[in-house]
Image (cartoon, rainbow, N blue to C red; front, side, top):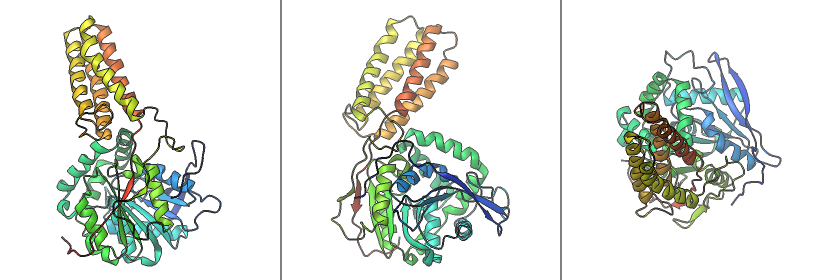
Length: 421
């Protein structure tokens, strides 16, 4: 299995490159990483999902570059830094075929005749469209969290699944998504969702000749086991891998596992049939040199949960902080106790809540405490309000500094014969 080189942070930073598309009357921004010496000659193109851009693909791009691959991640027209296609009427939310055309135009302008492609969510739909209609341009294909499941072919059915996914993503992704969605605009996002949701991708999957890897995060609520297996089954040369502890955007929450997995697939290491359920990539480790520092491992985080809960349940009643302040902090202590006992970490008892859910609850608690200090607690003693502010900031810091282990990535057996549902 390939290993990340010993690189000192910040590791390979992306270049920002612009490519003119005269046929569209616009230009496209891309984040790119050159191949390391002796690396792969075939570039890897990363295709973003709904309302997003290459920004959320940076952790994967950096690691693939560190593993010796040339990586390019375009902001398709209308997303990220790329101006929208002037041929689309406002707000310019494209469908899958239109985005595929944009991608082909960009590939032509860059002089990329053939590449391997990684697509996440709607980006996976674009990658399938490209591979089905331009098979000569696709060497290998990775579909991470491919959409849309036939059960959710209407926007009002698919978007609730997108929202459910967010609870299982790590808190750092939540903040980035808000920036991305504000940049894209709600109107363009809605139009893209409407035009992309009713996409019978299963009709094109049998036409994908390239070797294809389907990746599912275990907690993905958009891509369940049945649909992931159906996608893999319909591919002429497909294999399915599940990343434990990750959700829809596994390349962000488990970038080291995802990068090793993609690199192993691109090298052909997953082509041979292995033992069903075997680990093809090991669990992530805290010493990943390209990751932001997360000094709180699960055991230390669990210990802080217990100490914090006990403090919130007792200390407020020993201080002259005012009745509402005491009730607020004690209530959050009681909720924190329940959350701690339910979380899948060393202090958990039932362990039914994945750690990312626990961290999102902590971040939410921090924001609520800060809001309460500025509103509901007006008129309470200043010392108590400052204690609430300090607790809110502490919750946010604790949620953002926790290390969330993910993986391993496991091979999933898929039966050969089944009719499309």
